[in-house]
Image (cartoon, rainbow, N blue to C red; front, side, top):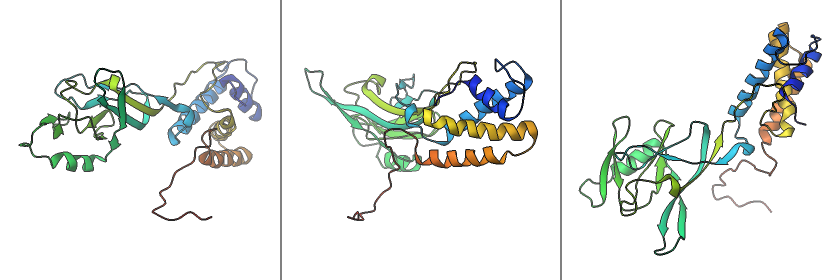
Length: 252
């Protein structure tokens, strides 16, 4: 069941035998408990890949023609989970082919682009923000991407016959985003209903220790159980962690 910030504060204060409040700002204790809930919520959001926070994400160009294969990620992105770019468009039509661009670890990406000879046709040198020179292709849509600063997405090529640089409008990206916190009485944290018990238990355990300088064993036990359960189930659509099978046959 989903709860507002005020309802969670009231629930925690009741268990702490504290004064009743009608707003999160009524007492110093209610202010502190509301802040504890916020801290616990932001920690929960950071520790897992919550499926309800996945969004189609607009990208932006680097802002300079000197870096035609750089795309800027929005500030609120926690993790980029999918990136594709328009590879071909049928002449005289609006039909196009979107192909996934594969991620490379930065060192692998550098090895790939560094293996290209500067005397090869359809290549040029691009200097990254850190001063590193990258040899990119200029006659094809990107095949690989990486990031050196967790801010810019860097691709290995672009088609100069189509555009002067990679275009955000020709990309598709899906990301896990960090939600905004609203610190108001009636604000309901952006969280699946089934996860509110874990947030409340975690906040209650923390508030008891902070306010009373003691551990509430029952609240602590509930918090641990809820966190273990949520680590196995983050969404309502049956998403599970995918492991490589290394060529093994599944048992029948």
